[in-house]
Image (cartoon, rainbow, N blue to C red; front, top):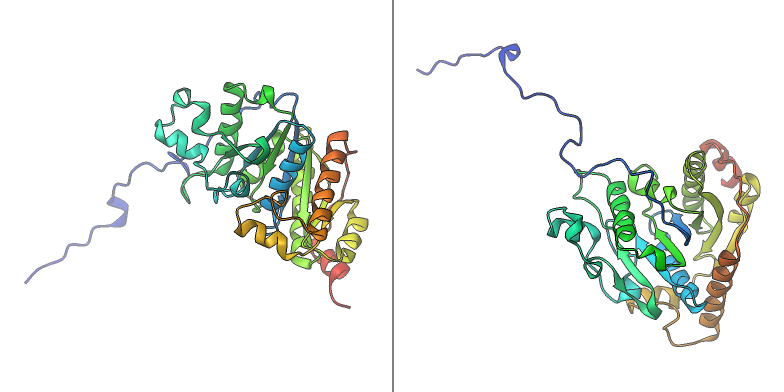
Amino acid sequence: MTTTTTVPMSSIKRPPRQPDGDGSVQVHLDPSVRIGTAKVFAVYGKGGIGKSTTSSNLSVAFSKLGKRVLQIGCDPKHDSTFTLTKRLVPTVIDALEGVDFHSEELRTEDFVYEGYNGVMCVEAGGPPAGTGCGGYVVGQTVKLLKEHHLLEETDVVIFDVLGDVVCGGFAAPLQHADRALIVTANDFDSIFAMNRIVGAILAKSRNYNVRLGGVIANRSDETDQIDKFNDAVGLRTMARFPSLDVIRQSRLKKSTLFEMEDSPELIAVQQEYMRLAASLWAGTDPLVAAPMKDRDIFDLLGFQ
């Protein structure tokens, strides 16, 4: 017969408790790292709202104005520059892992790729799930670009930011951006997310130079709900792109809208992107918006 000895829990020796996240790829962003003279825009919005499509076509529009453009994808999905490069390019985190995080061993061609019409493309990527913060990768990306003097030859930088408001990967681009642009559709969920983004940008603007630039209405044939929210909080719509199948098809065909076969509706969309790029380059007044309480948004936009 086997006897079992019960060991008191208090006598079990456990390893010393370590801080949550210890050993993962998390660092504090270096406040001394600045992009320089380029105009910097960070594109925000609800997940799946079309930020990457908007960012990529806006990058092309800037390039057609003769500007030297760099687009930085900040989502672990690393598909921001997919239509510009026609492929999923290796990420900064991939490149760093390849040299055991000795960044001095990296070459420019290890993490920067040329896309359509000369737009330079970088995908920050992200650490493995549960092991670190996307903000680290954004910070390292900007640091690498500075070390390789790539930002000195850039007129416009566009950060295409992931949709989650709560993580460091969301907040990191706000340290560098001049203007934050919010992509939304004319529906409650998109506007609800926009309200949270407004609050996050407002919080960061207390410590950084970033300011709200305006709203880009995407997949929206009408803008009545967006207009109602804008009026309530102090925002303005800078551009509107309707819900067109050709825009959806462009992603499937790995093409920007400037490469698709011309049609009257597509030409109108291209012209709207060109108008938006020209307006942003000329400079926009910062907006001072006041986010609403969640309950107030339901009252404003909910069914009567």
